[in-house]
Length: 103
Image (cartoon, rainbow, N blue to C red; front, side, top):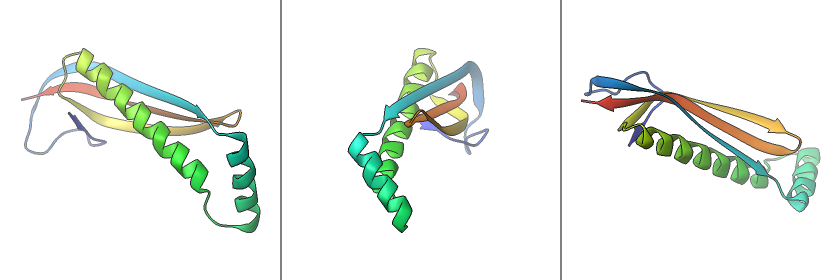
């Protein structure tokens, strides 16, 4: 399945629009990782624990988006938008786009 942030896929024409699809992932960060991330923020540097969790949340959200697109009979999702939020020390990633059938 092709998943892209662009409104079209080069070399293909959109034969049919199937509808809007979305996928969400909310993942909690471990308390110990929160502590070490706080220390990293104080002394400077990157927080590997948060980067790993954020990457995992993005993968889950995109996989859910693809599953929903397949359920509509689509073979691609165009115009994908990724949003990132922090809610009560939890990481949320939402992905949305338009499920299409490429011809």
